[in-house]
Image (cartoon, rainbow, N blue to C red; front, side, top):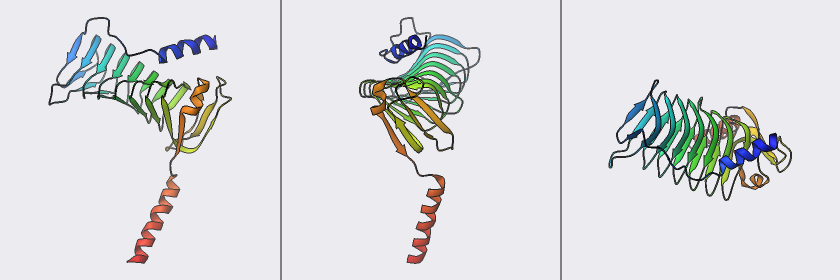
Length: 235
């Protein structure tokens, strides 16, 4: 059963750019709000040059929603099955639930707070920044980049093509074997001192995970104190 689940999730991570099949229920060309009680099939958020459009999702239910041009979607609540950032847009998610959240083209996705995501992906040259929230599966593909500095990854990391995952924390280490799936894992501690251990879902993932040690708070204090003392001696 575990192998079947793995195959299904890897297929989901490899899916290309989503094609909207049904008619768009609502297109935003000006700033707007989606709130509790709202229900849409498909939603598109577009700029009206030279102005940029921002849509705040506070609640409600949307089947699929995309940010285009240089627009912004801020999600703090509600439910979306498929949410993506395309072109050079931004999606900021700090709450609510999304089944599949992706950054395409040169779009950017930021995950924090109480965000709850099943599949998190960066495709083409998209960038995903995760500093909080809960995600089950993480998978950059093509030249996508995922930057992890916090939060919880329940299942695994899986890279494809030239996708890269950057890990920022303390006492970082990775292994090409072991873990729940047998393909290795990465361990360490986030900046908020939360200890983590995340499995790899593919053998290739090991070489595509880059570790970036950040100075511990005590080290930073020592450095700053030393600089202040040095400047005082020089004055």
